[in-house]
Image 1 (spheres, rainbow, N blue to C red):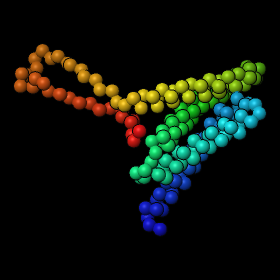
Image 2 (cartoon, one colour; image 1 turned 180 degrees about the horizontal axis):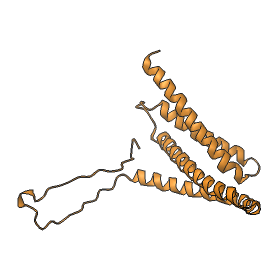
Image 3 (tube, rainbow, N blue to C red; image 1 turned 90 degrees about the vertical axis):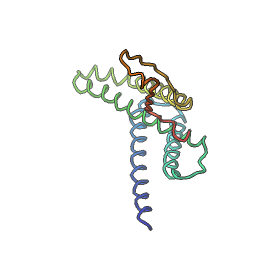
Length: 173
């Protein structure tokens, strides 16, 4: 093994652990409380596992020049969705757990009955936010021209241009 291979192996193990842990947290704190009927838990678990595998595959094929744009789109979509779901679930848990710790038991039970709707709301919001993000990324960067008039601007500087490039997340898509 070369040093680079060892570092890459450690990176893959760490990323796999982090991604697996995040998806497990989302499953446990967001999907399970929804109480999906029948085979739906297996369908959702398979979908989350597929997203996880696409993310790991993206890390493993990072330097490949033959990446499919469709596979990249799925990998980036799943990474964005995981990020949205993770932080929204954290927020839901904070909003849910803190009042439960300080309120009487009957109010805590009322909150628990409504957790299913809170989880469904988080999932819907995250999918919507992710689709909007993907649509924005696929649209490409926005170029805006802004003229700023100065009263005492020297004539020798007339036509001076300033370019600001900010927040480009277009990547290889």
